[in-house]
Amino acid sequence: MRIVTRPDFDGVVCAALLFEAEEITEPIQWVEPNDMQKGAVSVQPGDIIANLPYHEDCSLWFDHHYTNQPENSFEGAYKMAPSAAGVIYEYYGDIWSRNYDELIRETDRIDSADLTMDEVLHPENYPYILLSMTLTGRDQSDAAYWNRVVDLLRTRDIDAILQDLEVQNRCRQVIEQNRVFKSLLEDHSRLIEQVTVTDFRPLAEAPQGNRFLVYSLYPQAVVSVKIRYEGADKRKVIIGVGHSIFNRNCKVNVGLMLAGFGGGGHRGAGSCTVPADQAEEAVDTIVGTLLKNEPNE
Image 1 (cartoon, rainbow, N blue to C red):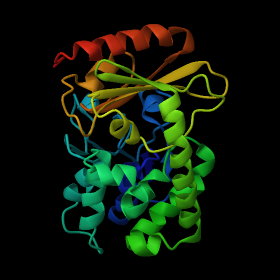
Image 2 (image 1 turned 120 degrees about the vertical axis):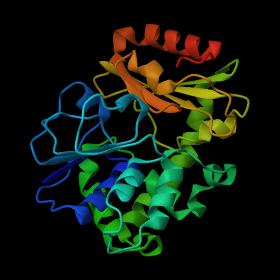
Image 3 (image 1 turned 45 degrees about the vertical axis):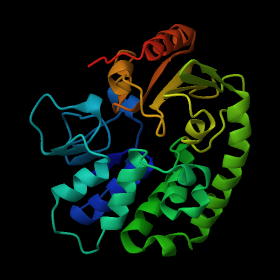
Image 4 (image 1 turned 90 degrees about the vertical axis):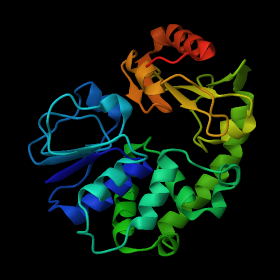
């Protein structure tokens, strides 16, 4: 059996749980939701998909995204819950040899962005949040690190995980990235009424950093839009949208809105990928919808 999941914190925790729950015989296949939606992922009988859209060839499927609601019967579990890891933890009941309650509780909070202002401004003081920020999923060359964190979560508590030399190095990088990211975020963001728009396309490479920071910098905004190129060839653009986690007055179902652009996600956050020559029109339409701030369900 093989796990197919995405390389964010929720996906990594899903993988850790599934290794204990099932007889996993193959290396994890790390993929992005957009690849699954476009049929670019080879799924085989025996595969377990977690935190990604459903594929009819898999043997088990676990998810929690609004736009991935199942239309047919399947083996596994789907629930609109704070995290896919929480769905898996509940599905398997009391089989666990370790107590993962704290891990699931923190994964729920991180994936649903249920964070305090201090946690956003000072993630270095909160072990699970800092660890989650080392898992960005942007570069497949990081797969060895993602696999390492999966193994660590299966055998160690959070304090011991943070003593791992590779984890320590990644955490130091994150702290420095966040410092630089704040300055670039301020330079490349603008407020349009109640919507923040951050455009990293003028930069040679989109910076990595604290995805929640924009909500603390623009407390009057109810939603953010972030734009960046998908790769160095600049042929595709990724548009990410998220409800503010502090000013919760956005009425638009983000996942449903972005499904119209070939993307998806949760009610409060999601993304889509569009050809670069269609990006301006897509951004204008998305921002226009967010400015109207009308329910779309």
